Length: 362
Image (cartoon, rainbow, N blue to C red; front, side, top):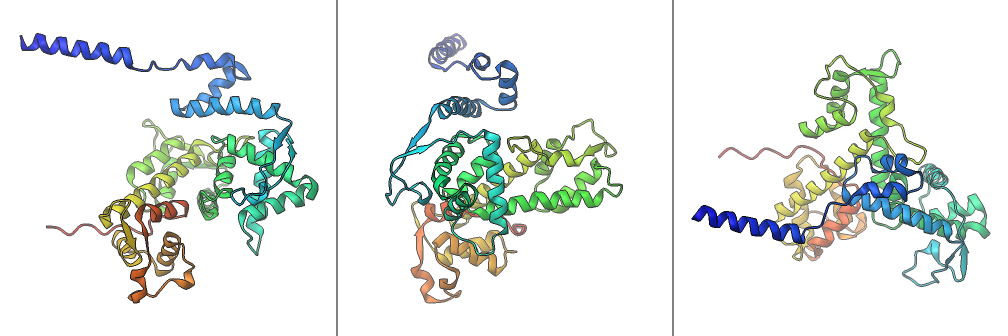
């Protein structure tokens, strides 16, 4: 009797789930409405989950609407408006292709990295456009580029530039990640004694482990798989390593470089979570400078003083020169909400400097 009752209860629950659950979308319906038909949709949808496919579809719709616009309404001169968008009146939509926008942003980064005196990034962006298109056309290009990079979130070059431009990410994140990728390519090139563009899987694995000594075994495995390794591979199998670092015409990286970026972001989230756990505080609790410094030193004892000061400066939004010395009584007066400190660190290029010391044996 109990079994029958259970069966009836489960059957009722199943009927309720079937009644209320959202059916899995039939994404093949998009093939007929997306420009380029089934072939292009399959290319766009490859390897993406439902959430990512929604973004792709929104971009496709948005791109069509953006092309139809001949002008953008100026946003005025309010303080909340980014300096490069301050304008009254109608602004011409220059209607560049995605490839044009990506190439323009890459040129901007080249100039930025070559700069000796760094101006604020939004100011640099507008000055770059003035140099490229002349003062009279700069505002039109500023609006045009801004609307494109705000829309195309799945495009790496555009989404990263947008994040830096809007202060959602420090430019050091982009610069250091670019340098990491360049260093990795250099290591592989050095190991390629015949200059054939080929490495065997054992060499590939060794370079990954030596370049990223703090990565876990499963992370190295993920990178190996993104590079072309599979369970049937042998150590002698050859890999065209140069192909791992290529981009398509719209600036999209190969899966290997994308996986490096994904791991960097997840490692940062994990690191910040470790800080919170070490502090034992809730997000709405206040944290003082000495407490946060102590937590960082406990979870990352290899960290040097310069890096520690950089992190403290970022978390409490104080210039390095104004940070009190360790042990100074002024330290206790410097505090902020824990959630605010973690959000500020999330924006910066924060990463583990060395292994966490093992827990002492009980």
